[in-house]
Amino acid sequence: MIKLGCDSSLPKGWQWVDANSVMDVRDGTHDSPKSVDTGIPLVTSKNLVGGKIDFSSCNLISEADHLAISKRSAVDDGDILYAMIGTIGNPVIVEKQIDFSIKNVALFKFSKSSKVFNRFIYHFLNSDLAIRQFESNSRGGTQKFVSLGNIRSLQIPLPPLAEQKRIAAILDKADAIRRKRQQAIQLADDFLRAVFLEMFGDPVTNPKGWEVKPLKAITSKIGSGATPKGGSESYQSEGISLIRSLNIHDNEFRFKDLAFINDEQATRLSNVVVEENDVLLNITGASVCRCTVVPANVLPARVNQHVCIIRGKSDVYSSYLMHVLISSPYKLMLLKMSGAGATREALTKQQIENLNIPVPPVNMQQKFEEVRLKVNSILENSDEFGNESLFESLSQKVFSGQL
Image 1 (cartoon, rainbow, N blue to C red):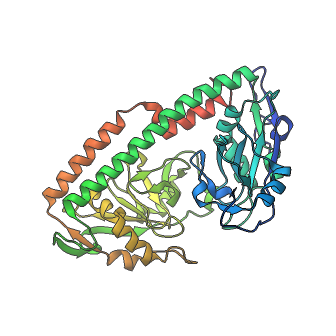
Image 2: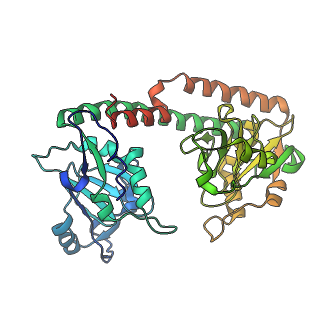
Image 3: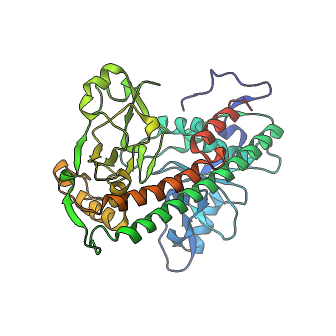
């Protein structure tokens, strides 16, 4: 395990420790028990979602297999589960209501006399400091995994128990606010999608009979970029933004892990300069078809080869065009077109240029834009701690002893 924190100074009373030196860290079964119709849930990495266990998709195993697994890795209230395969992470504090067994999941156990507070560890496992350690040590191709040995040697900046509880209380409150904001964002997104369908109808079947045009006829630019020479090794901590597919989500731009390039590299990508109100569409990989409008505060920017710039002409609002592309019927059509789930998932430039887009009158698009701006204004005026990047900044400060 890379000891990311060992050279970093900590406040008085704090110390760097290996996870397994202060907790009992185990994993679940390595076997594949036979599934049964009625039995005990077998929780795997994929069942850890949003801080909870999703039992609805668990396979069931026999009581005998459950008892055999429990001899090695019995799960109790207050334990923490951590996904080891696929999407690494997604920690869950166990609130045990039913019996279950685990597979491909790390188990952090805490004794009654433990000097470690489970909610402090839970928040640390969600922090960038922990995630970076696991990412640097994860293995595998498409299916990433981290070993039990690496999890046991995870470096934790550990303060005294009373300070752990104080920090956990701070992050609990901030996380609750963040989750409320996330719920508000989801409600706003659902509302805008409903307004869009009410005003314009299904953009695939076009029940309102709007004029339909190929995308190339209503845009002034359609094109993707490239990765600068040297790849990720050439990225900088500041400079010109390089937008990648991981930054693009439906009706959302995520600034986390935004890359930056220097002026020379940006000049080489002068054919993919991103402009205000450009629509960005992911065109390759597992995130294919995700789409958003570029926020002004990410500019100046370029895109890499996995992201396509779509720049509408004056009679097409970016917000309208983006909502066409992310609407459920249109998204389904795009995913089928891209071969989502196949070995190669991609949309070609020709396919994008020839997409049929219903084009309602500009004044109707403008009305939709006015609704969108009002909704966004409400969200922007909500509590600042709900902001994802601010929460991450708070997390970084508490785990370095700055709060």
